[in-house]
Figure (cartoon, rainbow, N blue to C red):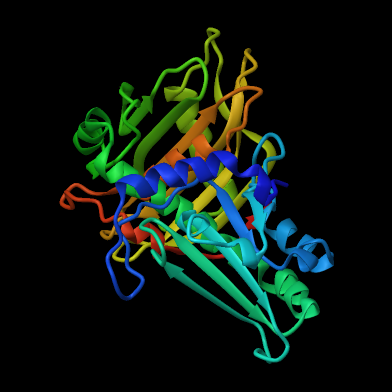
Length: 353
């Protein structure tokens, strides 16, 4: 846990930001760009509560593990500050959680959130509660929903970057061979074309990211984890060979998770998340995430997925960037990607297999 007094670097960055930024008057609007590292959240809470069980419960919620990763990684990096020290500089952090406990002002729990409250590209979530016990109950009952506000915002930040900076090569290939647009990260320029399949990669030794797009005939099958894995492994066996002759990528059996993802104006998607590994020789592996959806005509299944190879290093942030790119997959008739769709996306709870 970082304390207020360990935020020297953040203060310096914010001071530099203020030197070149200006604020407009009224309504709390500002031209200042939010600051902070990816997946870092500032928890604003009375220091006595921070040191108590209620503070532990809130921090544990924020530090929940990223699902389906090969090693333990926390969802958010947490810094803390007492409300009395939460001044102008710290209000420009891009992820802020304010926990306000006051028995005289509140009779029940409430959760509110606002975008761009003090800076552009920011989310501020405020929990108002009459007691520490009520906050602990909220964390147990709805903590995942609170956490998802920040996770979704981080995906939206990545998406807004990909609207401006993306691989034109990958997009052109996706339209040509699959009939769908894709805003992949700029460094993804290597590719291999198969039958109704496109494999894209940054081809890096470290922090390697790959994306796979393919389409298949659809006959009404339920998009369950076993069905999607069988399809995935059949495509990987043909199209994604490993470094050793005869080897290829395959879905690891250790953990599989699915949920439904709703994006405005698009077909409902099924998300599959898990781990991949090599079969037939080699020791590569890592996390993957997949979006699958049926076309409006109802006769084709479109699958887009991203997977990461970054051995012995954290994978959360790089995985999040390519996951954000999956939301950009859209029909070739939709030229411009509306990244606000990510901020408005909704998803169900995970089913774990």
